[in-house]
Length: 260
Image 1 (cartoon, rainbow, N blue to C red):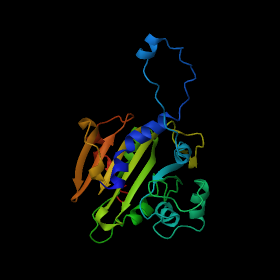
Image 2: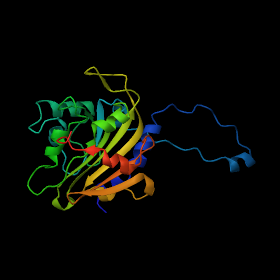
Image 3: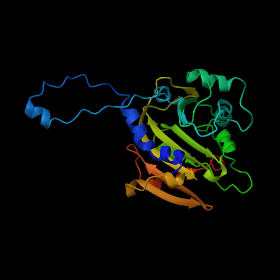
């Protein structure tokens, strides 16, 4: 199986564990076990240490990008600068400094990306992501589905992008696709045109899988996953613990930036 597919398939569990580990530690020391209690007591669980990117992206002004094969700081900056043209000067260096990188990132590395919005109604840098995926080019029927304004209203404008995986068709046999995880913030991250620096992500709402990566969406539990096609391209939606509606209902409330 392709390493990227394996990584994507493990996303929900990995990110849930990482978010749990952001909470406070349990400081209660267990009692000294006797032979009886030692046999009966469950083994303590060990929470994984969150990566630097996951710590930074607790603030919804950032999201996590999981790098793919062939990614460079330049290509990542180009994909997430918010505009379809070349990235602004210095953005790649900003990413390098923010993630404390000494060199180019490796495949599968988690990077924190500052949120750069192309417009007042945008939820994330959709224009540059569409350009990176070749959306709109001849023969490419993939579209970048995202929460509609109505769906955002359902969650009181607290829906935030948290994690992104992209497959840009390099190598060609992998095809083009994406995975995007959306979380609920504890408050609207933007208010009156300004960012709220105190906002934090708290709970997984849903995940959207598109194109070549849709096949990586889990099949169980069946009531939390909805698969569908649009213009012959596969998509899937999986609900998280914070979702208020079934996956099929959420899928009906997705749209492209052009449809917004």
